[in-house]
Amino acid sequence: MGKVIVVTSGKGGVGKTTSTAALGAALAQTGAKVVVVDFDVGLRNLDLVMGAERRVVYDLVNVIQGEAKLTQALIRDKRVETLFLLPASQTRDKDNLTPEGVERVITALRKAFDFVICDSPAGIERGATLAMRHADVAIVVTNPEVSSVRDSDRIIGLLDSKTLKAENGETMEKHLLLTRYDSVRAERGDMLKVDDVLEILSIPLLGIIPESMDVLRASNVGSPVTLADGRSAPAIAYFEAARRLTGETLPIVIPGDKRGLFGKIFGRRAA
Amino acid sequence: MNLLRLFTRQQSGAAARERLQVLLAHDRANTGDSELVTKLRDEILRAISKHMEVDADKVSVKIERGVPVSTLFVDVEIPSDAERKAA
Image (cartoon, rainbow over all chains, first blue to last red; front, side):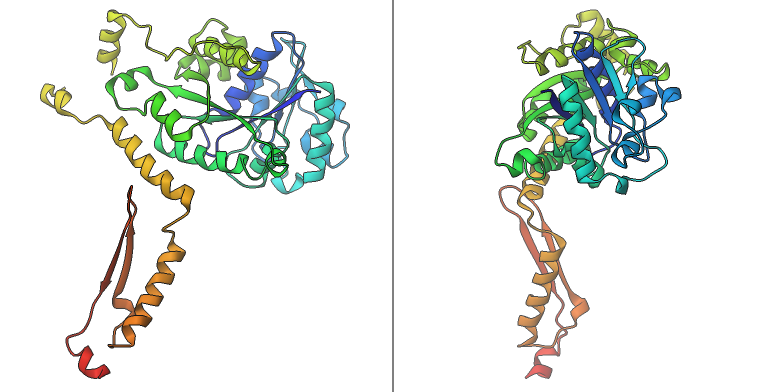
């Protein structure tokens, strides 16, 4: 039986889709069978970030409504053969996601894959609550910025009350993924510190992804950053986060801490 | 860049942390929402009306959220002849 992971945040634009694609590709590269599922019905984007936008025929809503079989809707990645995508519908809205339909799809995916990674839409409405409903593990994507932290706190509350695990009296395993971390701003003291965010949200840290042009570049060419440039800083951070997700213990390095005097001087100037 | 400004400028990260801590303490406890303020406003107005005539529009109730305490501000405008009228 595979593990169901929801990538969620409350706030939009913090890096849920980027993180879903990057972690999915990182896990699949180890040989695990991975499916990334886009729950953002009406505003799908995971297909674009994965570079599969021209191969979408059927989607999650088609499968839920019984118009297509699950195997017809799954798109196999061209680069990693154990990586699959289940796209969201672009034309229909979130009302087409029924709790029973989602349960059926997740149950089937759980049987066929090692990891089922659900990319949640922003917000706290139906799409977001259905994406988290069947999760075993939640990744809360947060930027070191006040509005993102507040929304993450709200989402953590929902994870602890509105999910199947919570309703069964179990605790949801939650991890914090801090994204768009800017070491120059952090050094100037103009950003929430990692410890501040951890203290406020009090869930364990899965990784820190540095703000980087490499993320934008990867999305431009339609490739998860862990496939586009595996040696870039954000890719390395995602690979390590993926290993922690499978239970490995690795020390977390705060981006920018490794920089020498030269880097620091340059960093200050560039600001 | 102004050098003096560079050295004297407050670091905004610490301010962000403090604001969040206060905000989330209230978000989680769900206190001080507008419903409560409206209820307080109506009840306070009713209590005062028993003794003097006051204009409902001249009562303002505000909450300033803080840690460890929040402050409730009640501002009632009483016309100078209100007591006489009610009496």
